[in-house]
Image 1: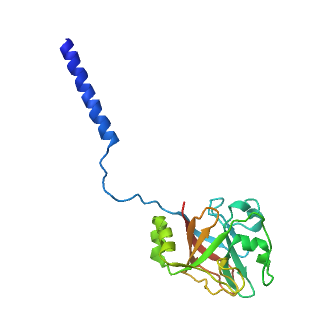
Image 2 (image 1 turned 45 degrees about the horizontal axis):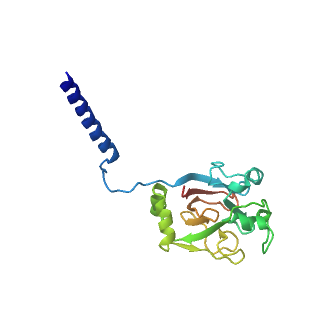
Length: 213
């Protein structure tokens, strides 16, 4: 009886020991790295009233200035519209809130003293690049590293403060892709212009937005 009990005990220990080894050292299925999608917002609609957006997820839609003032530290993307030039664009929130401009317009009004700094870049990216980065956020950083993004220059606003807008030399048309970087945490993202204003009818620009999460 004792021999049977000891034998059963040894078998149980051996089985348990083998099971532990299997759990601790699972064989990899393959060597493919884990792919993580970027945080994305599709078909976000901006216009002359709803110009403020948070990639932190405060809202899935663009906000007007009154709503934005309730969550100012989360706002990192701001749209601009110059009616005199029919010129849409994106502007760094800090520059926007400073009210230091070379001309006067309704969207230049200071709105927050705790704005998030965002640097804008022109890119040579195409639609497939945007799709790839949406599926794999590591692509965004690759685009910054391999020269596919170039910091913007503007005749009025500081370097890197905007894309598009009045007197802008970057253009702001359907299909274009621009890059941005949030200074507070160095997270990078892309916008893809889906549709833009219709002269004399509306001031709307629709865009897809992705950012490292």
